[in-house]
Image (cartoon, rainbow, N blue to C red):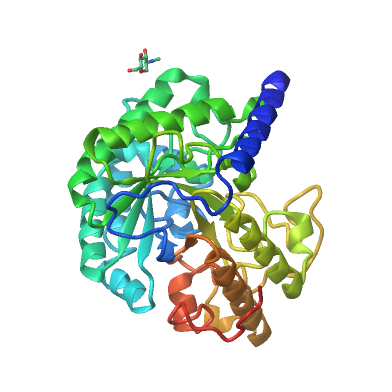
Length: 425
Ligand SMILES: *[C@@H]1O[C@H](CO)[C@@H](O)[C@H](O)[C@H]1NC(C)=O
């Protein structure tokens, strides 16, 4: 694997070289009749996190019903048993987000939603504890999006074997996705299924995202970058079997976003491809130590990076959070770096009181101002390229992350184009 890491680095270097000689930043992949013009319009969107794929920190109460063993959707479903899981999850799917939410998004000036869904909703595997029914809800969501004038990016958030080991892949722990070729095939089957299902809804579903956050920077224990690149080519093929338009969105795999310049580029015979990169400043000791001015500078610098990509690029996840305090954010049973409870390497920056759980309106004035400044800087930075999709629409009570409550409390600009702190980048 050391060898393969070196090969990967060489590939990336080659891709970068290609970018300089063939596809300088600013060059565009040919676009074909999508109902959203990703060249000239800005993506302004929000993720519907914790809805059709559960995450402990977005809905802690659901996981607490499964006892301490319930750390992800897999173990929650196992702990509850299929009847109770079906009942609890169906209730959640039908109430957590409704038609009214889509109207609120539209009223705030959003034009996209990114909707995570797991493979288990699309191509259920015998032996998995997961329950199904999410696709009917997704169908409904697409109708609500159409009514509200929003476009949808359907995002495959979990693959069999897990592509990142995060609880939000459905199964926390080791990363086994590309160790088993059959699992890659199942994932491609899921893409084909989604592609077929939504082929005629191209007026709303402008894009399908191949796979969320495949972890390619962990050497032997992660996903192999060349396997991921092959998977992206195959995914493009699955989409084109049924539809010439639907854009393929590809996460950067935690590689430098500009290292993808040249990959599936202008002269490679593909079209309607978009990169997705995620930007968080709270999962790292050094970044947590920054004051708000420094956080703003970090965000603006990331905007410059994103502006140097050769394909449409969205920042498909980012947040106003300035701490990692939200309850269960780092996983059930795991503490926070902010207050030093994360374990070795974490040190005290401040108390998590108020950030752990609570209302946006209960945050101190200066904290709300800092979050607003940080959000505005990121909006400006990420609109330097194709645009942005905030993480996340709503939560049970994570005040730094909850766009619905932040809009109501004027912590998120409402409408999203309003600025109290213009020109920060
Ligand atoms: C995966 O799919 C390809 C193409 O259909 C097939 O050739 C291959 O045998 C499959 N691999 C496994 C392990 O199922």
